[in-house]
Image (tube, rainbow, N blue to C red; front, side, top):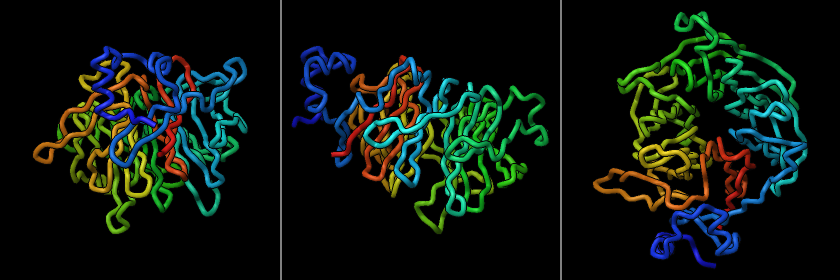
Length: 345
């Protein structure tokens, strides 16, 4: 099995093949021969995973995926025929539901006393909705009028949530006013921080948020500042503490598994359309693998600008990491295609 490593990519470049899309590459080499990534994080490609009959189960944008305790995979789409598609890891459809989320964007799963719940952000309804795994609505958070920062519902376009151990809900208003808002488990606004601006504690595109629990003695928030190519770090009280710089990587939400951070990189280089890849950061927040992207290089402890190396992905929007460390990559604006699975080797 030959790896799609830097050496082989350069060989393809010399043959004038590096700019080919995935179908073009697969016409030359079988899919099972392609292995992408770097270091110890390499993956076989399964582009056929999860394909369904689009007449019965259409997708528009495949925004995010999560896995529940049973191992089922929940895919969030903004197609109101079926906002949520539930798969097994082999790609078989188990169930579908949801017809009321036209702007379905962010999907978070959280275990609360032995029962798991989903949190769905909707940029068109301007709401965050908590549901059971079967789709029953438990809580809905509307636009935060009480904050004094929002006068109209259409100013609030939430893109992601993260749930604290005490049930507090952190909401990233990534397509709106760029605040991170903290609510109680009952949906009561506690405070907000960030907001539009160029100061280090402010945000330009607060696309994602997660709680970093890798060090139990130092639990804090990671917030995507996509247009700045940064992950910004905040304490749970909203005070700014630093940033992880990822030049050339226009990242979506951070997903933590064990000691790693996984990020869909929707654009790369100068932010051109159709130039996405996947970013994997190790324990010290260093980029160690970029499936679909170039080899990560550090000089004087600074990551050098990243860019797409092969056109496997169009616009990756999320990374779901299963129990076996396989990756599932849903995509935005990718021809209504189903997710791509990357199998760890």
